[in-house]
Amino acid sequence: MSDTTAPQGWFTSLANPTRFLALSGRVLPYLAAASAVTLLIGLYMSFAAPEDYQQGITVRIMFIHVPSAWLAMMCYSVMAVASIGTLVWRHPLADVAAKSALPIGAAFTFLSLLTGSLWGRPMWGTWWVWDARLTSVFVLFLMYLGLMALHKAMDDPARAARPAAVLTLVGFINIPIIKFSVEWWNTLHQPASVMRLDGPTIHPTLLYPLLVMAIAFTLIFFTLHFMAMRNEILRRRVSAMRRQAAQSIGSSEARP
Amino acid sequence: MMALLKRDLAIATRSGGAAMLGVLFFLAVVAVIPFGIGPDLNLLARIGPAILWIGALLASLLGLDRLFQADREDGSLDLLLMQDWLALVATVFVKCLAHWLATGLPLVLAAPLLGLLMNMSALSTGAVMLTLLAGTPAISFIGAVGAAIAVALPRGGLLVSILILPLAIPVLIFGVSASYAAVTDPDPFWPPFMILSAIALFFAALGPVAAAAALKGASD
Picture 1 (cartoon, helix red, strand yellow):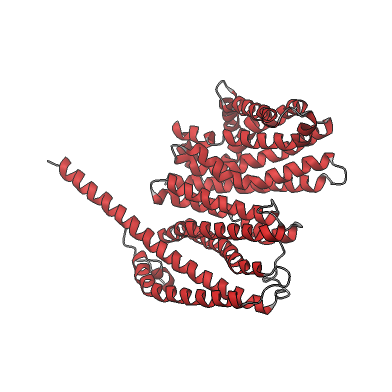
Picture 2 (cartoon, each protein chain N blue to C red):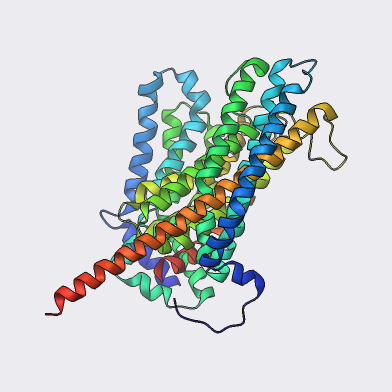
C-alpha cells in the first residue's frame, strides 16, 4: 500500500481495513447480544400472538418468512451499494463487504423460499407455484449462487472484485421486480400488507411481533456480515503474507 | 467500426465458426424434445413456441463465451481496450451486433423449418419468428456482460450461462407469452411484444456499458 497524503475525512478513515477491524471488534459483542435479545423477544411475541382466524397456527410461519424475504432483498441492496463503492472508489473494503454478504443473502433467500414453501402447502395446497413473486425470488437465489460461483472461479480476489461488482449492479434490476411483482401481476402470492403508502393493513397483534422479528433479523444480518467481513480481511492478509513469504524464499534461493 | 463488424462476421461464418454450430445446436435441442415427450402432434403444436424459444435461448448462450475470449487469445482485446471509454462502449456494441448477426439471425431464419416439424400453424410460426427477431438481440447484449466477466477465466463457458440465464428469464417470459398471445384469441399480442422490445432496447443500452466496465476491470 502506497502512503497517500490526501486529506482523509472521518468516513474514509473508517474504511481503512485496520481501523475497521478494531472498530468492528469492539462493536461486535454488543451487536451479537442485541440481536440475541431481540430474537428472543421476537420469538416469544411470535408464539404469544393470537392465531389468525383463517390460517390458524400456520400464520406463525410469517414471522420467519417475511423478515427473511426482506433481508434477502436488503442484503442484495447492501451488496449493490458496496459494488458502487468498488467501481467508483476502488476501495478494497467495499469488495470485502460485497463478497462476504453473498452467502448470508443466499441463506436468507433460501430460508424465505423454504418457509414459503412450507406455508404454501397447507394454504395454497401446493409446495410451489410459478407465480411472479416466487419466480423472481428464485431468480434472486440463482443470482446469489452465480455470484458465489464467480468468486470461487477467480483465484485472485482483487481481479474478481470489479467484474462481480458490475454483475451485482446489473442484477439489481431484479430487486424492484421482486418488490412490485405482486402489484404488477395478479398472482397467488398476497400483495404487500406492511410496507404500503396508506399504512399497514395487518392487525397490530400480528404486526408488532413481525416488526420485532424484522429488527432481530436485521441485527443478525449485520452481526454475521461484520464477522464474515473480518474473516475475509484476515483471510486476504494471510494469503498476502504467504505470498510474501514464498517470494522472499524464492528470491533468497535465486540469489546465490 | 464497420471493419470490426465485417471482421467478426467473417470469423464467425467461416468453417468452424460459431454461427453454424449455434443453428445445429438449436436443431438438435428441438429435435430431442419429441423423443422426450412422444410424437403427439397436437401436444407438439401446443408447446411448440415454448420449445423453439427455449432452444433459441440455449443456442444463443452457447457461443457467448467466445465473444471476447478469441480476441483475448490473439491479443486484439488489449488493443480494443486502449481506446477511450465511449469508443470502447461502441466497440462492444458493434461486437454484440456482429455476434447477433452471426448467431441470432440464423436462429430466427431456422425457426420456420422447426415450426413445420413441430406441427405449428403458420400464424404461430410467424409470431415466434417475430418475437425471436426482437428477443435474441436482447440475449446477445446482456450475454456480453457475462462474456466480459468470464473473459479471464479458463473454464468460463459454463459460468457465462449460469450468470446470464437468470437475467435472460424476462426475455423468455415475454417472448413466449407474446407468441402464445398471437394464437390464443382473447389475449392481445402487442402488449407483451412491446415489453419484449423494450427489454431488448434496455439491454442494448445497458449491456455494452456494463460489459465495457467489466472488461476494463478485468484487464487492470
